Amino acid sequence: NTAARVITLHRKFDHITPVLKDLHWLPVKYRIKFKLCSIVFKTLKINEPVYLRSLLSYPPTVKLTRSMDKCLLHIPRCKTVTASRAFRIAAPTVWNKIPVAIRNVDSLPTFKQKLKTFFFRQHFNP
Image 1 (tube, rainbow, N blue to C red):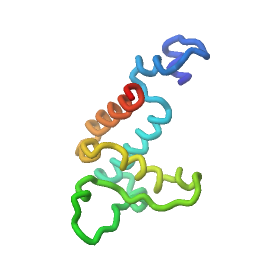
Image 2 (cartoon, rainbow, N blue to C red):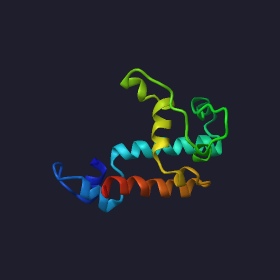
Image 3 (cartoon, rainbow, N blue to C red):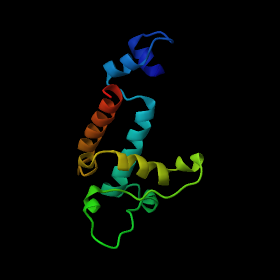
Image 4 (cartoon, rainbow, N blue to C red):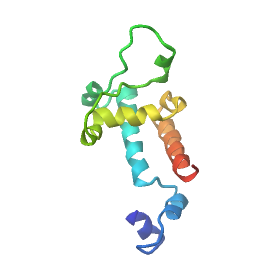
């Protein structure tokens, strides 16, 4: 937010939302979600970073179901709010909330473009 104010020469107490919209920047909350989803995409599709692959898993299923092609991840149970912020819980939670069309994209640049557009519309056009 401070960087947006510096770039656009807005004062400290000016409302930042219109500035972010003009710059086409995501608010901090959505930027965090964007980064989490980007890391999950890289881990699942590109297999990098390898050490995170063990933290992500698909739901255990015995039968083939229609939801298998939705690329949903298993969200482990947690007892505290602090534990829910861990990567192994926060990443699948955010990943499962984005549309299937975005999750099933094959290239990283296309994924990032569609994801940013999704979060931008979600925040600025409720």
